[in-house]
Length: 355
Image (cartoon, one colour):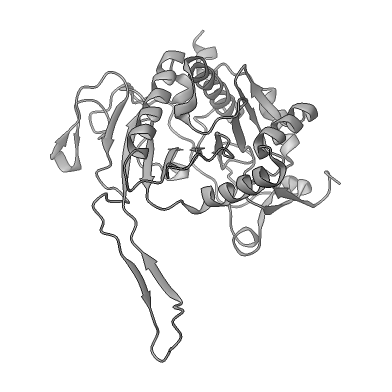
């Protein structure tokens, strides 16, 4: 069955994905992406994220930072002083109290986290200590923002590469803190809660045990974390990164686990870059327990990596047509993707060339 068209069930979101392994062989005459530049300078005087440079048309100047640098997004999608409001308007002629037009306010805060002063070094090219510092910064931001009265969820994420909509190549991530639990975490919360209540067990802990038993989709692991292509993966080289210990958030990690997380993130992103020998684009984000004051013992800390590239450095997977109107579809199995990634070096290809 796994070599012919079939569907796989996503236990986290309770959604299906269509898998069509034979379609990877079809000819491609569609859009071809530009490969990212490999010759970025250490410092770019025109970059609004580099140390000492100006932002927002010269009205704000960055400090000459030497480590991570955090600031409120100058063009934030959310504003902390947004007043609470709910709108339920009735169309003309309707007398029922049930409205089909519902809107509500969404206060929040958006911050930018620059990984380092270097304009040219992405996550896998930073040192172990530098990545540990990035993780500690994400943890501090999660704690600080999650403690705000109006914040019930903190989303840490990175968009890497122009093909993923990143507007500046200086390596950075974002932290959005919101009042309402967003759609994707809501799906995962509901399934994890249901599993916890009905089986007195953690969904991802049990899934992790099954993956360790199968040994088919694991890409990399260390003492505290495991990275694998999930059985239900949608994106071609998608990775699910999970803590081996049951915990709910970045703030639960001890110093050794922070080091382990930095290690495995450097390794899997180096594998990504090595796949097509480019700075591999992706969207990555941590899914942590909500910060709504409840314990959320059911929540298992994890991260998703969603990279778009499929066949080469210039051909990406498009989510269109059937994917948008019916259900997600992929062109190679999770097992095939995991096998390719697992067998790649986790030493960055540029380091290998330089040595």
